[in-house]
Length: 620
Image (cartoon, rainbow, N blue to C red; front, top):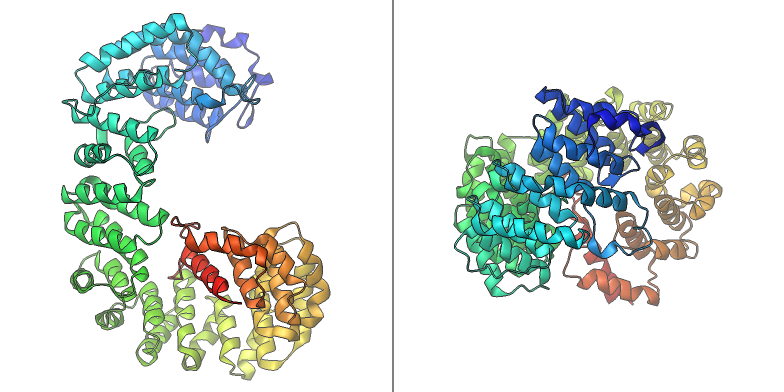
């Protein structure tokens, strides 16, 4: 170990951390000794941000280790946090120590320094403070594969004593996990302490391949329902036990849903069971019906309004996946939706997305932008009821996302959306949701001098998103191509996000042909999104798939841009044979391949990927 007096012996300014030269590290370490708890806490936060930044270690990290070890024993407080910092710094994958990147790496240097100071830190395993003992266990476990043999026996002896005798069940469970890292497997599924049984079950799952053995699942279902709180202490990879449980259980959705059901039936402590069910829905396909049943069962077990709102929002997120939501589910949502409470709005959103006819009347009484947009999507025949509400809300000055949602809610109503023309004109004039208002005015097809003048005026600005939308809408109403060329040519030839603008050309079709000289070079652009949008635009303009298909095929994948490329490829009518294997993997994967990035109620990207893949596989 090294005391603060030795800090100046290290050439910190020649070492680097996350923000450059590490000259500030000595000051941060000295702050640990000052007796000011707030200053010490700030110093620890700064050290996490510099020598360990978002999981990365640096040249200055290893030289800090002996000073941090000294602070553990001699600074006035924060011993558990400093031990945890040492554990986090030394965290590594044991199977990687022989890789070419290990020798001479900052992580290797950190582990070597920690092993050197570990003999001085071992008394922390017997400290009076439980948090210090728990952090010390994690510190020795972080280098379990690298501790020299002469020290290894002392460490294991200390862990054995904790496992056998410590008065705190969580400490005994920690010792079991650490002993496992030293190669000491202990049969503990029948241990009298539930914390130890749960730790043993987690270790068993980590060594298993799903589906998990039934005895492990039973222990987790019985003993894991109330994880968290004071005993949810992180390990060196910073994950808590709850996070470890979730990670393991979502690997095996059948076991995960079994456990979630038991936890919910036991009271859904801290919403652990319902959170687990939600995580399974987010990672696995075709489990929505089971998850929604569990979320429905969890509703009366939520301990506060915030938790209840969270479950109702999850119901709203996944209820679209059910072809026919059940009566019990819809009736329960209706009861929450009519209540005069904060939870009524998310309940009503879920009820609307369930296509329950009772939702429409409730939305008309509570016309929030998100609710109106959902009602428009799910009740497209209700134009006579919803368009007046949309008009009223826009006239009242709806702005930002609310204004955008209201304008976009007009889309399902087709020609009837023209009734909202006065409000759209006002949006364009005042700059409220102006981009979507311009696009809607172009689609409405109503040409007046006021509208065309406003659109033309909007093309004079500096916001490319607005100028392009306005130029295309102006062309739709007037046939004016010069304005389109004036707006688009500099944007497409610049280094900006040209794919944002290319998508605006869709309504023009072949009329955008004069822009081809600006679009064709973008087919070879270094940016994936730009190549995709250029290929899509090229096909729409020329009607020929020859240039577009090779670009789109190369981009197809389980990514947002890959999904867009796949949809654009579907529009060409060509599906190369070599793509069928990829399409089959998209269609048949039991796991979700794309995460949920939905805004304002669109289709889940993974569901869209699967549907497009299935359509293409059945086409000739």
